[in-house]
Image 1 (tube, one colour):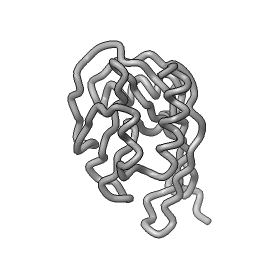
Image 2 (cartoon, rainbow, N blue to C red; image 1 turned 180 degrees about the vertical axis):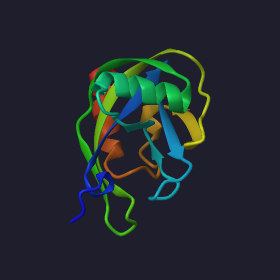
Image 3 (cartoon, rainbow, N blue to C red; image 1 turned 120 degrees about the horizontal axis):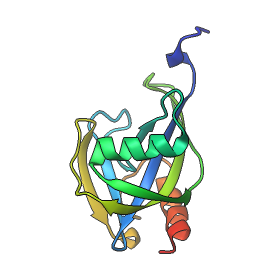
Image 4 (cartoon, rainbow, N blue to C red; image 1 turned 120 degrees about the vertical axis):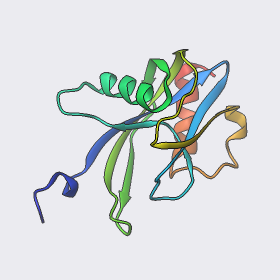
Length: 140
C-alpha cells in the first residue's frame, strides 16, 4: 500500500441546515455516486477544528452562516469501484443564521425541503437516517 494521502481515509464534515422548519439539501457537481441529494460539507484541513471546518465549508459552498446544534452521527463512504476515496463523514445538525444560498462550483443545485417530504428523494447512502437524527437534535 502506498503512503500517499489519497490512500488514506479522509475526514470530512457536513451539515443538515434548518431554516424556518426546512432543511437544505444539495447536489454535487461532480458526485462519484451520481446526482444524489446530500448535505453540503467537505474535508477538514490540517490544524482546523471540526467546528471551524464545518462553518468554513458551509460558507464556501453555500454562502450561509450557521450555528452548530450538535452531532448527527458518523457516516462512512467507501468508493472502491470508482476509486474516489474513503471518507469518514461527521454530519451535524445546524441552524441557519444568515445569508442566502449562493452555490460555488462544487455544487450543482441546492433546495430547501420540508423534512417530511425527503423520504422519496434519491440521497447519498444513510442520509435519511442522518436527517431524522438532525431533526431530533434541533427539535423539529
